[in-house]
Structures are given as C-alpha cells and as structure tokens.
Amino acid sequence: MSTHNIKIRLSTLLKRLALCGLAALALSASSLCPAAALPPSGGGDPDPNPNPPSTPTYKAELYISSLFKYDAHNVMVYVRNQGNTASSPCYLRLTVYTYDVLTGGITPYTTAYYSVPAIQPGGFSTIWTYSSPSIYFSHFYFNWTVDAFNAVVEWNENNNDTAIFNP
Image (cartoon, rainbow, N blue to C red; front, top):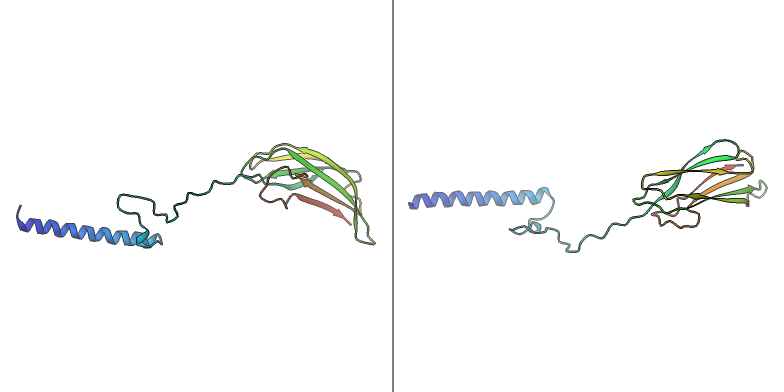
C-alpha cells in the first residue's frame, strides 16, 4: 500500500471521527444535556443519579361522584375509585342533621351505615340509601361520607363527603 493511499485513508478516517464528534455534540444539545453527560464509549447509563427509582406507591382513591334522588326517601350514591389499586370494603355513612334557622347551627338527627364493596381502580359501586325525613324537607342537612371509618388507605382523605342542604 502506498503512502499516498495511507494518507487518504487516514484523512477520511479523521473526517469521519470529526463528524461523529459533531453528531455527539448535536445529540447532547438536542437532548439538553452537556456532552460530558453522554455515556462513555461502550455504553453506560448517562443518568448522573446512581440511585434506582423508588417503588411506585399504590393507593385507592374513593369519592362520591354523584347522587341519584329516586324519591323523597331513597338516594342512590355512586362511589368511584380513581386510585391505582383496588379499595378494601368499607362503609358509607349517611348523617341527617336538623338546621336551626334562628342560630344557623346544625344538630345530628339520625345516622345510618351502608356496606361498600371493594372497588377496582377506575370502577364504581352504587349504594342505595334511605332517609327519614324526606330529602326534600326544609331545615335538614344530609351528609354522605364514603370510607366513614378511614379503613381504606387513600391519596386524599379529605374528598369523601357530599351533601344536600335544604334551608
């Protein structure tokens, strides 16, 4: 092989290496990381954090999505699970309060509990509740609470109530 051919091959190889270097620099700019963060030749993890990601947390998230007033005493409650794991069975509580128009205060009148089955992620369950007095009577406050005894571990424990108020 002549010296001339060796020089041409060496020149071509150097040009290819220069193009590879520019490509690596362009890659680092397009991915918004410095060239120093690129993996060394032979592969490797460019993540500067050597700690593995934490294990995902799985929790249920129960809430009352709607009420269906069937008649003056019967209400169907839709309980949904928007969490990423199934809930355990729990209880739905209906508390009826009387409203004092003179003081603006409320006093518990009656309480009833209803079983709620385990609900799959994204699923729902319907629970029929009965109320006496009528949900249409004035001066009564009706409050439904799912997971009344906090038996289900949830993302948000503060969104388990819904109410009807007839002043």
